[in-house]
Image (cartoon, rainbow, N blue to C red):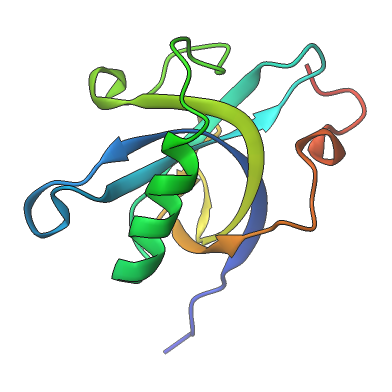
Length: 128
Protein backbone atom coordinates (compact mmCIF):
# COMPACT_ATOMS: atom_id res chain seq x y z
CA UNK A 1 0.00 0.00 0.00
CA UNK A 2 1.31 3.40 -0.99
CA UNK A 3 1.36 6.24 1.54
CA UNK A 4 -0.53 9.39 0.52
CA UNK A 5 1.52 12.22 -0.95
CA UNK A 6 0.68 15.50 0.78
CA UNK A 7 1.36 18.94 -0.60
CA UNK A 8 1.39 22.23 1.27
CA UNK A 9 0.35 25.71 0.24
CA UNK A 10 0.33 29.13 1.80
CA UNK A 11 -2.84 31.14 1.26
CA UNK A 12 -4.47 34.36 2.40
CA UNK A 13 -7.48 34.16 4.69
CA UNK A 14 -10.31 36.23 3.18
CA UNK A 15 -13.12 35.09 5.42
CA UNK A 16 -14.46 32.47 7.75
CA UNK A 17 -17.62 30.51 8.40
CA UNK A 18 -19.12 30.05 11.85
CA UNK A 19 -19.04 26.56 13.30
CA UNK A 20 -21.97 24.18 13.44
CA UNK A 21 -22.82 21.38 15.83
CA UNK A 22 -19.96 20.76 18.24
CA UNK A 23 -18.20 23.91 16.98
CA UNK A 24 -21.25 26.19 17.30
CA UNK A 25 -20.11 29.59 18.59
CA UNK A 26 -16.60 29.11 17.24
CA UNK A 27 -14.90 29.02 13.86
CA UNK A 28 -16.08 26.33 11.46
CA UNK A 29 -13.78 26.96 8.50
CA UNK A 30 -11.48 29.57 6.97
CA UNK A 31 -11.94 30.72 3.36
CA UNK A 32 -8.68 30.84 1.48
CA UNK A 33 -7.39 32.57 -1.61
CA UNK A 34 -4.31 33.40 -3.58
CA UNK A 35 -3.73 37.13 -4.10
CA UNK A 36 -3.92 38.67 -7.54
CA UNK A 37 -2.31 41.90 -8.61
CA UNK A 38 -4.82 44.62 -7.78
CA UNK A 39 -5.70 43.28 -4.36
CA UNK A 40 -8.46 40.72 -4.89
CA UNK A 41 -8.12 37.06 -3.98
CA UNK A 42 -8.75 34.05 -6.20
CA UNK A 43 -10.78 31.62 -4.09
CA UNK A 44 -9.02 28.26 -3.69
CA UNK A 45 -11.27 26.64 -1.10
CA UNK A 46 -12.07 26.41 2.57
CA UNK A 47 -10.60 24.33 5.35
CA UNK A 48 -12.38 23.20 8.49
CA UNK A 49 -10.13 20.43 9.83
CA UNK A 50 -6.78 20.43 11.60
CA UNK A 51 -7.70 22.99 14.28
CA UNK A 52 -7.61 22.47 18.01
CA UNK A 53 -10.58 23.93 19.90
CA UNK A 54 -8.33 26.63 21.32
CA UNK A 55 -6.97 27.49 17.87
CA UNK A 56 -10.54 27.75 16.49
CA UNK A 57 -11.50 30.26 19.15
CA UNK A 58 -8.31 32.32 18.82
CA UNK A 59 -8.54 32.43 15.04
CA UNK A 60 -12.24 33.39 15.17
CA UNK A 61 -11.39 36.28 17.49
CA UNK A 62 -8.49 37.39 15.31
CA UNK A 63 -10.52 37.32 12.08
CA UNK A 64 -13.64 38.90 13.62
CA UNK A 65 -11.45 41.84 14.66
CA UNK A 66 -10.79 42.58 10.98
CA UNK A 67 -14.35 42.02 9.77
CA UNK A 68 -15.50 43.88 6.67
CA UNK A 69 -18.73 44.11 4.68
CA UNK A 70 -17.47 43.14 1.23
CA UNK A 71 -15.82 39.96 0.00
CA UNK A 72 -12.10 40.23 -0.82
CA UNK A 73 -12.53 37.45 -3.40
CA UNK A 74 -12.79 38.25 -7.10
CA UNK A 75 -15.30 35.50 -7.82
CA UNK A 76 -17.81 33.13 -6.27
CA UNK A 77 -17.16 31.47 -2.92
CA UNK A 78 -18.63 28.13 -1.86
CA UNK A 79 -21.44 28.53 0.70
CA UNK A 80 -21.09 32.31 0.51
CA UNK A 81 -24.32 32.88 2.47
CA UNK A 82 -22.59 31.75 5.70
CA UNK A 83 -19.35 33.64 5.06
CA UNK A 84 -18.03 36.41 7.23
CA UNK A 85 -15.47 38.49 5.37
CA UNK A 86 -12.26 39.75 6.89
CA UNK A 87 -9.37 41.91 5.83
CA UNK A 88 -7.01 39.78 3.71
CA UNK A 89 -3.99 40.37 5.92
CA UNK A 90 -3.31 36.93 7.44
CA UNK A 91 -1.48 34.07 5.76
CA UNK A 92 -2.09 30.47 6.71
CA UNK A 93 -0.62 27.15 5.65
CA UNK A 94 -2.61 24.08 4.65
CA UNK A 95 -1.75 20.59 3.56
CA UNK A 96 -3.83 18.94 0.84
CA UNK A 97 -3.89 15.98 -1.54
CA UNK A 98 -4.16 17.72 -4.90
CA UNK A 99 -5.79 20.52 -6.86
CA UNK A 100 -9.24 20.03 -8.39
CA UNK A 101 -9.80 20.81 -12.06
CA UNK A 102 -11.31 24.17 -11.10
CA UNK A 103 -8.30 25.15 -8.97
CA UNK A 104 -9.54 24.33 -5.48
CA UNK A 105 -7.76 22.44 -2.71
CA UNK A 106 -8.71 18.76 -2.42
CA UNK A 107 -8.91 17.42 1.17
CA UNK A 108 -7.22 20.38 2.87
CA UNK A 109 -6.17 20.37 6.52
CA UNK A 110 -5.08 23.43 8.52
CA UNK A 111 -1.45 23.60 9.59
CA UNK A 112 -1.36 27.06 11.14
CA UNK A 113 -0.95 30.78 10.71
CA UNK A 114 2.17 32.13 9.06
CA UNK A 115 2.79 35.45 10.84
CA UNK A 116 6.20 35.60 9.16
CA UNK A 117 4.56 35.93 5.71
CA UNK A 118 2.89 38.96 4.12
CA UNK A 119 0.02 38.39 1.64
CA UNK A 120 1.83 40.48 -1.00
CA UNK A 121 4.68 37.94 -0.96
CA UNK A 122 2.32 35.29 -2.31
CA UNK A 123 1.60 37.08 -5.60
CA UNK A 124 3.42 35.14 -8.29
CA UNK A 125 4.61 36.76 -11.52
CA UNK A 126 2.03 36.33 -14.26
CA UNK A 127 -0.85 35.63 -11.87
CA UNK A 128 -3.99 37.51 -12.63
